[in-house]
Amino acid sequence: MSNNIIDQNRIRQFFFIIVIVLLGVLLFLELLGFLPALLGAITLYILMHNWMFHIIDKWKWKKGLAALFLMFVSMIIILLPIGLLVNMLSSKVSFAIEHSSELANAIKTVVHSIEDRFDVQLLSDQTIQKIQTGITDTVPQIVNATFNTLTTIFFMYFLLYFMLVNGRSMERTLYEYLPLKDENAVLVRKEINNMVVSNAIGIPVIALLQGIVGLIGYFIIGVDQPWFWFVVTCITAMLPVVGAALAYVPLAIIFFADNETGKGIFMLIYGFGVIGTVDNIFRFTLQKRIGNIHPLITVFGVIIGLKLFGFIGLIFGPLLISMFILLLKIYSNEFITKQREITNTLEN
Image (cartoon, rainbow, N blue to C red):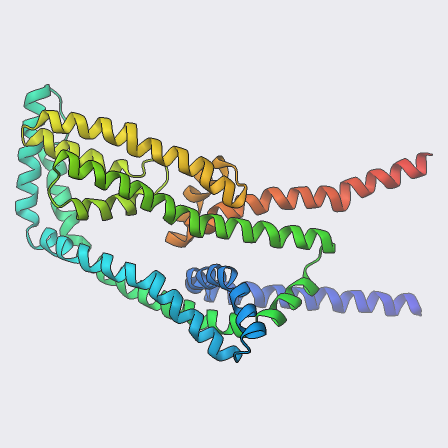
């Protein structure tokens, strides 16, 4: 009789788990579009939660007021530079779209000039025509991207408010349902904090340093609109592999096209020799010092993260790789090592 009851309970438990998993998958698929907002909120929460607890415990502020204050500060630090950036680049983008035919002709002239001078073939006329069509087609994409970004930011701060207000209870719940030993749960929390802080702070700082170094060179060489190229350098420096080369290589090409060969050569030397060196030195030292992260995890993580999550993948791509490695270690500690100890005990 007791065995029948146990079997019935197991069957009920099995079907109950199936229902939970199916509902979870359904909810995940329907809310997948909000994943960047959720990841952004998690990032800001990890950066702010200690400040939140300090304000509540030491300053005796109410939770809602403390959360709103921290959100306001983060908006100034994060959104204000983004707004200035969009304002600086919008005129350039609008000009490129409105004068796409003139830009295509200018590109054609530059390409033919380089091809005649160095006896190489870079782009065909058909390719240049595709570039013009691509520039024109970017109008709806830019509008959609702007709307999606604003929507993501709104939901990110919406989620962040409730995370900050319910921070301690949320963390206790996560610890309670995390199927790990206490010491392994602490390891997971430490790894997540290190990765988020390292990438959320390290990547923008490294990009800014590269932009500053590039700006110095732009002034020395005599680049037109050096502040614009400073912004472009900062943005491209956050991208993996190619990085800031997307800024100084086009500048060198422009110099070559304008018959300023000396400036073009110096731009390439300064770009690869100085700006690129700054990237390698600070990426492999600063981020490792902040979060003790191997550089290969950062590089490959950023590549994976951008594909999976978009811009926020700069932070959560490396986190995925680090968590995968950490979970392998935890699995070894939780099961393999324990199984070996049991086997050795039975053999003895």
